[in-house]
Length: 465
Ligand code: ADP
Ligand code: MG
Image (cartoon, rainbow, N blue to C red; front, side, top):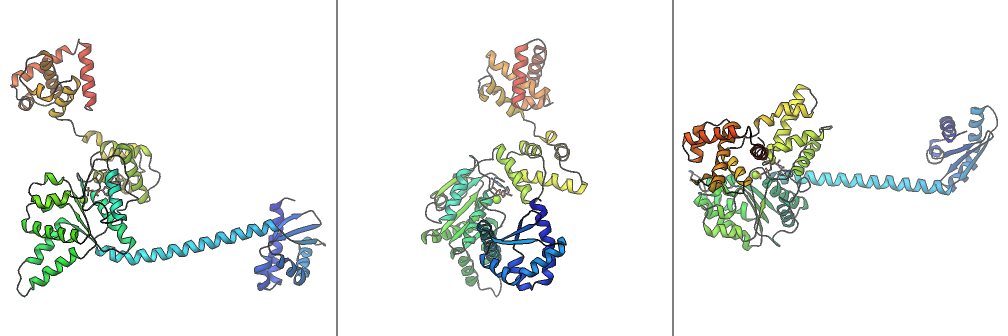
């Protein structure tokens, strides 16, 4: 008889035993017994407790034999044996259960802690979605991420201030908030995270005269909020340009924190040197720590960001080609990249159509909306292709290869972009007639000149035309 059958018989007999044996004996001693063999005469049960074997034999053997007899309708020899391996197995299982329980308990404590932190975190404007673990890094943002992590782990030790620069939608706020999040979760440092506009409003409100208002008190309150912290995070500092009074206040805040060895983190879409309206004394302070730049993420990173987003939202079974399609067209701004996916997902929800590549194409129409290159891009591509400079093409030179290249620019702008001769002429600073003649000349030549055909098709390909 195979083991499964043996076990099945034992399960049934156990049910019977449950009715006759007291629960205090059944639970700890009979229930864990395991049936291992039955040869027709002898039924063998094993136990992981030698004491249990002795105890059962002494107190319950008769009940056990009776229930076997009842089941088989004849006498059966029942062996109850202690088995060392079985004992080990039970021991391991017990340990596993214990560990699981401990882990659950730990998780519950952690959860409690994080909820306790939550209200605290909210008062500091920290968005819990922005963390280091969900910031996807590649060569274009790795330094920014690494330095933000260093600052979070060890504030003021190295880079003060940390100045994160990058175009819109590339993750500056995400990294800055991740610092705040990390530090807050560790729990012992005071963080203040603020958008520059809010800093400005806060300042203006504190200084504005109102009847019955104690301005000194309001100002002290303002200063206390920004200076009595261990880490001050200020987002989009470029907005402080032209706000002279605020700049002075920020300058003082900066010095006060810096001298007290407190950490400052700033983000901006411009480098300090490109903020001419901010006085030099403040700009040099921005530069005195570490300035890191974020460039747009690479294709694979964009795909990964979308995959993570889908995961985070619990959206399953999206074909990878959908992510690749979106990532192909949304290159410069992660916010827009995420927005495109969110749009496809929302449409699919509403229309109850599963997300496929064709569906994503239908919703986003990226191909149609893809920005067509302008004449400057064409000039650049033609110059690159013929090893010329843009200035040479835009010049009045009549040297043949330059003049040919110029004609090709006119031709592509006319035929592929359907630009008017007028507008091409304006862009190239040439006469309408000249542009028309150049374009027509290439149009004729291309019919017979294979090399010219190849040149133009390569240039167009590089422009996605
Ligand atoms: P910025 O402040 O530079 O304008 P944000 O930090 O607001 O940009 O980022 C815009 C959106 O893109 C956010 O949802 C952010 O989480 C996401 N994001 C940007 N870069 C990354 C990245 N490398 N990995 C994951 N998400 C990113
Ligand atoms: Mg931002």
